[in-house]
Length: 264
Figure 1 (cartoon, helix red, strand yellow):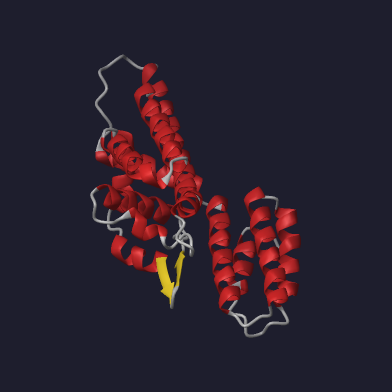
Figure 2 (figure 1 turned 45 degrees about the horizontal axis):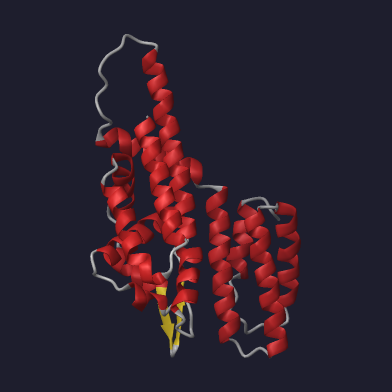
């Protein structure tokens, strides 16, 4: 039990170091993260579960977009896809199948790699760290409960967790972590699409700036998880975009998510 928790904490520490790194040192930090995963049964079993059947090449195409000279990045919507995608991305960078500098062009239009890497860390690595920590702790707690129950029985030498049992622990953990957290993540992804729509529109600079301000405020309240404030800013956003009929908005899907979570 202690070994599993220590391996998770060590992994989170390494991801924190990767997040706080400069791009010049990022490759060595990625190597340390992948090594930590490969040396931990808890982590390797967890990530193997998420990448089983995952189409990473299609996910790459969906995530890294280019329109003319402009490049965009959109993180997958589902938490489980984020875990599979980012792990696969780091692994491919580690094994030299992808170059980090090529990817950073999608995170800063001016090709300032320090700025781009900081954006990459915030947009890609922070959600990845959060989701795997939550799932890892759920698995550890589930295992701890099981071990405490066994301690009340006749002492026996316990066999290591088998693949089927580990898979069940991951499934249970994913189910607990998803739900409201997943809906909030979906809303953040949708707001990223809203920004792209505003950038591609023919709105005046004043109108575009006002809508962008509301989108930023909308995301801020979503991350704060305050349902009352989310509802208020949603109504403000709905009112702000209503005059612009040609704006390619995702407001219908945003509304559906907020209804599902009983925010509106």
